[in-house]
Image (cartoon, rainbow, N blue to C red; front, side, top):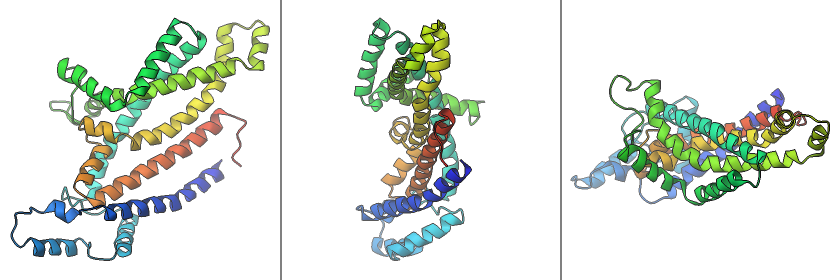
Length: 319
């Protein structure tokens, strides 16, 4: 397993290189640039000022040189200077990544404690009222884009009932900036993300439990007179959880990189919100940094999924 993990980690290097090259080229092919977004068009001698800023930020150099300079700086732990927010990108990434990690972990917890148990309950009593009701609700929830639910949650729980804060990742008062404060502000966006994912996980769990419960070894266990609860706990549940555990690993990376829309809707100061702001300002250094971190998270999430799969299923050998 250790050899496999090392091989996978080494295999990430060319993939990350390809991803950063692609993002770099796409940013420079897009119309407009960071300098246009930085300066006020009403300033006199606009052309001279623009040329000065281009030279100061190294944007007059050929693209391969610009990319090489960025790559060398990243190896030294320096993501550059934010054109839009006028500070080191490293200072922006820390708090944003912290907030997004809280949001992703909260979302995963909500998925585990709601989606999986609902799927198990459906599988224990298939084709009953509860199963049909949950299936209908799941199809409705899955068919509607999750940002629609996010807007509904903001209106109902934040604006109308004042239960949760409607925006920002920290509040005011004695809890401002504490871990509890961060969790409290992340809870509503996490619920919005978990709503859609819960429907997927309940369907996954239900299908996996039903498939396993029809296997011959489960029938044999029942024929021996073993109690139904014991059959499900010892024979069905563990084997049915193998694909679910694998999917959790994939989704952990996806949640970190896929929260852009939710963070934008809630004005939640995470990696997604930082990326949206950077894109609107053509802030190349921030976009490159967040793209690299998202790519690393997704690749590590895939690796975690494979490791969890091997742990859950003893038949899998990666050597």
